[in-house]
Amino acid sequence: MAGLAGPALAHPHVFIDTRVEVMLDAQNRATGLRISWTYDDLYSLSIVGDMGLDPDWDGKLTADEEARLSGFDMNWDAGFAGDTYALIAEQELALSAPAEWSASYAAGKITSVHVRTFEAPVPLGAEPLIVQVYDPGYYTAYTIAFDPVVTGGAGCVAEAYAPDLGAADAALQAALAEYTPDIDLEMEFPAVGKNFAEEVRVTCAAP
Image (cartoon, rainbow, N blue to C red):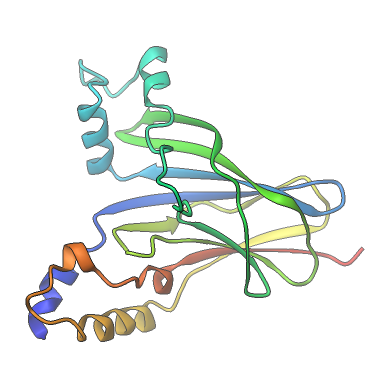
C-alpha cells in the first residue's frame, strides 16, 4: 500500500487563509459568525481567468468586476456545511446559509467574506464556543492565519488552536491503508479533514 502515499500528497488542492469573527450581543450571546477566506495565488488566478476578470493583468479589479466576483463561491450545494462548524460541549450548532457576502482581489489573491447566523442567540460563558474550519474530504486546507475577533459583548476572548498534525497524518495513513490499488483516490479520498481542523475558542468571564 506504499504506492498510496504519492496520490495522498496531492491533497489538499486549494489553500485558504481564514479569519473568524464571532459576533455577540449585549448579553454575551453569540449571534453569528463573519468568515473571511483568502484563496491561494494559483486558485485565485484560475478564478479570475475563468471569469474573464482583470483582462489587462494589472492585479486590480474595477468596481464592476468586483461586483461580478462577489458571491462566486457562495452557490453552495444543498447540505454543504460551508466548511465551518460551531460547537458547544461537543454539540454542533446549526448555522444559516451564507449572507452579506462580498469579494475583493489584491496582491494576486481573492478574499471573500460572508456572514452566517445562529438559529437563536447562543449564551456564552466558561464553556467555550468552538468554531472549526475544515473540509471533510481534505480537498481544501484551511489555516486560521489571522487573529480571531470578537465583536460586541464584554469580557470575552477568542483564541486560535492548531491540531496535532502528527496524529492527523497518522490517521490519514491508516485510512489510506484500507484502500486497494484499484480505488481512484481523487474520487474516494477518505474524510479525514476534521483531523486537520484548526479552531477558534471563545470564552466569556462570569458576570
